[in-house]
Amino acid sequence: MISIRSQREIALMRQAGHINYLTHQELKKHIKAGITTGELNDIADKFMRKLGGKPSCLNYEGYPKSICISINDEVVHGIPGNRKLKNGDIVSIDFCVEYKGYQSDATITHIVGSVSKEVEDLVINTEKSLYIGINEVKPGAKVSAIGKAIEDYATKCGLGVVRELVGHGLGTSIHEDPDVPNYYTNMPTVLKEGMVIAIEPMLTLGKRYVYLKDDNWTVATDDGLPAAHFEHTVLVTKDGYEILTGE
Ligand code: MF3
Ligand code: CO
Image 1 (cartoon, protein in one colour):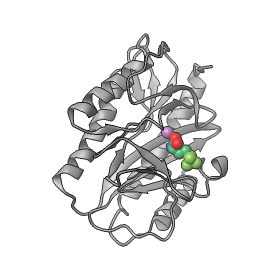
Image 2 (tube, helix red, strand yellow):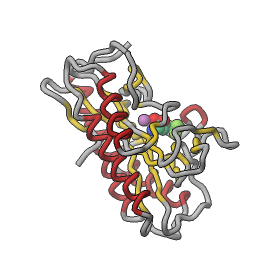
Image 3 (cartoon, rainbow, N blue to C red):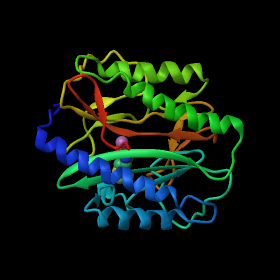
Image 4 (spheres, rainbow, N blue to C red):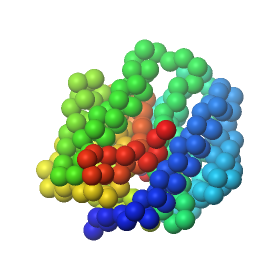
């Protein structure tokens, strides 16, 4: 079942999205070689709580931390700890914020210091593919148009599209219907005004294949090559979309 949100719910999701955005901006200031992923987790946890938000990844299906930090070949759900960022890393920071019972979900991949041109292009083109997907959002459009647009762009860039993880509806829970794949499917689902979805392309420099690490959370590329991930929470409006986790 796909929920249609009332004006009241949309107002709360806007707040949840805004706290998410501000927390990402705060973290950006701290992305430097030498900081540990555990320190970044604690900064985000404190900051979102100060703004009235709750880190809804914490304890979600047993997840032990408030945010997910995935470095280089890690695609999603890296668990913060003692690992230090170093120059040349790419670092995906992904988290959900709850505000008065409503959720937001957003991801940014940061570059630490400098990286090769091909890794920089991976990050730039993954972000671009997110906006290309978002651009398909309007009432009457198929959910599958989003994945097709993202996949077409990724393929043109020579990048892999991870298929094991997909975008999703969200609202009172982090993960609701519909699934929002980043690749073409023949799913008939149509977007309607008032739906809220998270669009989140995960693109790889090498092959698209991934595996689950021994910690049972971290998903990484099979070939060890880097992956990038960008995500926004998006509301379907009367004539298109509104990004709830944006500026
Ligand atoms: N934003 C991530 C997702 O959609 C994180 C969910 S919470 C976690 O999968 F517990 F899995 F981290
Ligand atoms: Co998500």
